[in-house]
Length: 592
Image (cartoon, rainbow, N blue to C red):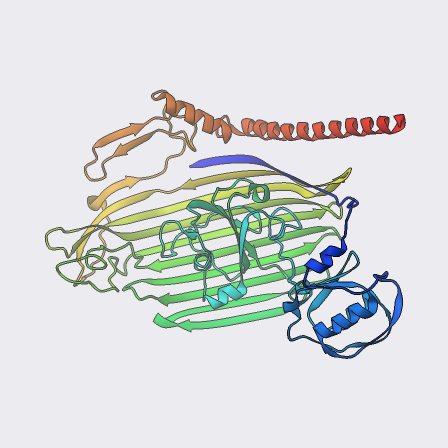
């Protein structure tokens, strides 16, 4: 299978600059009689006037009442907020603003000037203020506050508390998110958010899939954005985005090594080394090794993970990052599932062992991945950044796995099995991202913009075979070696590139399908994307043209530039409107 796509991403958001406020306030003496928390003093004086204060220490409310009487200002507060608070009093010559500030010191309260006095409130912003958390998207200052999506952030602290080892272990902690497909965390990191597919991104750059769990050794944090966010990440699924932010090189030397030992002889070791190589080059290396058995018979796993990272400051405004990773994952006795009868459903023979595994120790699965990302960032101005990124990912897999194929309905203990084999399978992905983002001011408006292009090409080969295997007893399993030869082949299938029919529209979503009975090979039916049913023909062509999955690269470029042209027309229209508006305003002013 081989397909490519180019997408243009443009985000545009505007906000008004703060204009000079204009308000008319009407104040009546009756208001002071209706508000119980408003302390009324004599004639109101200007805060800038200096006077002599002699207020003894005591309960804060008593001190404030004395202050209001002496200064002649109005204080607006909630009495419950003052309960149990104490003030050290005041002695000396101050203006009312400074005097009140001294009286409130150490109370956790703050004051805000208002008409004729001050409003007193809890100073939560001073006591509990948290630093802004940036979301790793396409904008420099994307934070939780200015992104409309619901965002869940899980950092190293969450990883440690949950004893997580892979991304899948962490996503279990996120509400409305779940694994898509196998819950055993043995295959690729595919997830559902709110019932829809979710994309997996790394450092806000594109979407890549590995055919094995993603190790946490080089992960700094995980951001889960729920709902569509194509302005941040380009082409994506409607469920949301799971963005993995990797550990970056630091300016100081740091080393961290961890060794863990657990049940079933499970061992995990990690090493994290980082520091500067010279004034402009920093590096980081993350390693992990994992090995162990499980509570299931014959199931053993092993993982090796290596992730180097180099960051180079080419100039004061230009940075080059080269980041890669290699992961080798092996399983013996991959568990393919077991019957419900005898586990959670009734079986006349009773419950079989929870450690039962339909696979023997002669079955094996190996899934490897290699990935490298090269990205160049340039700060064009203080508010505008440019970025160019290239990512190459290759997945290789070989496996021979036992798969349950039905429980004997007579004795309810004999489990039929087949062997699923894949040899020399691979998938290669190339992705290029170029974008410019930032803020510009035009007139009284500040515009936040993103202009980007995304090119993705994927090619894969996945030949598979099915073999018959000996049945196994649920209650007394006896494992015998698998017999893989031409006599036991049930199905031999490989992916053949460029195989089409005259009714196919494209090889991504407009292919013909034939349905064959897996048991006897009988033809069951066919689906044709065009030329048979008018509804299928219309839907196939609309989808194909919309996603630019036809006529090769020239048409994809044409679609991309068409979208860009529409945006430029919108911007031009806004500019023309602004010029005409400004001209009319100038003429009106001159006539006056």
